[in-house]
Length: 125
Image 1: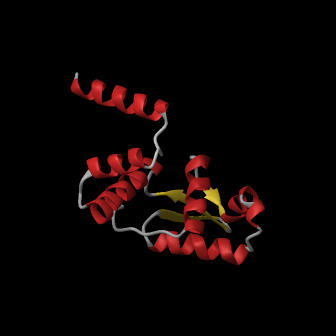
Image 2 (image 1 turned 90 degrees about the horizontal axis):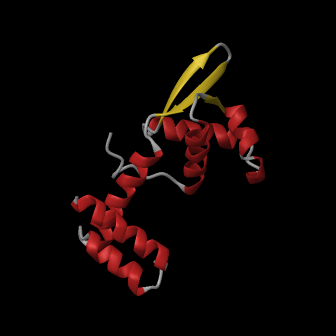
Image 3 (image 1 turned 30 degrees about the vertical axis):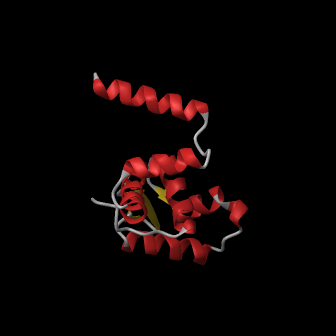
């Protein structure tokens, strides 16, 4: 499933992070406990879960009285799709321009730069 064209809100992403971290089917009540710091009402969580399901990000399966949610898209797949979307929309398809932009803004630490060098060296082998 391509996630480049799937747009999710910040609150929806918070829900996805909980589900990705759980790694197994999880109920809305369990999600609610894991995002207590957000002080979201049950109806808010239900709305976010419904939106994510409609967007194809989640599977919802009823087991008894409870609805269990699982991710249809992995965190890695979602990040890859969003990165591709960013590169296409803001940098005209040039990953190089994205890296240059990060470097020019001193966003990349020395450690980041070394990790990138190591990554590209490994890719050449």
